Amino acid sequence: MSLSGAHRAAFRREVSLEGRVYAIRDTEGYPAPADTGGDRRAVPFWSKPTRAQLVVKHVTAYQGFEVVPITIDDWLSNWMVSLEHDGLLVGVNWAGARATGYDLSPGQVLRWFAELESEPTAEPATAPTAEAATESELEKTLIHTTQP
Image 1: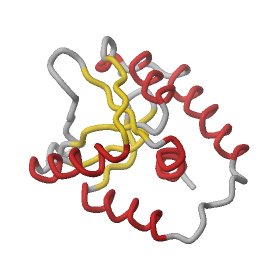
Image 2: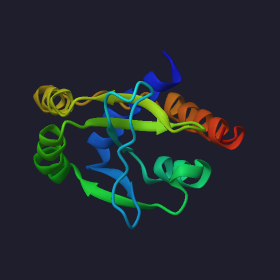
Image 3: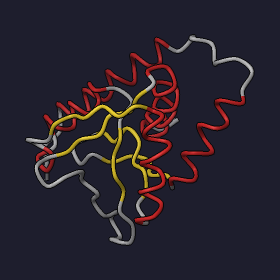
């Protein structure tokens, strides 16, 4: 699994456990940068405040932003509707020197979390080692790279 794929899987698992997501904002609002082709924009969200804080600290474009917690209920009920209406994607656990990762449509996110609710039992908590490796890899990626 790629690092972005690991971050995506961690996002789903961690948000379900924590009951909230984290966004970043500055005085102008929440960022929604365009993809490399300039076709679509995405608003980034993270599953842990530490993930968002690393991006704010190490990605020049986001320095000075504050990390903002959002409850999962508010995020799924209100944010997904607004993002869909505005034609924006949902960035999940972006990382690295350029803060990149997976982008999903709001509809995909809603289906993703609806699937979790319909599962009879939660996934076993056998991934602390993988999660720790993912966090460690995230820190390495952000600390040892520079903004182009």
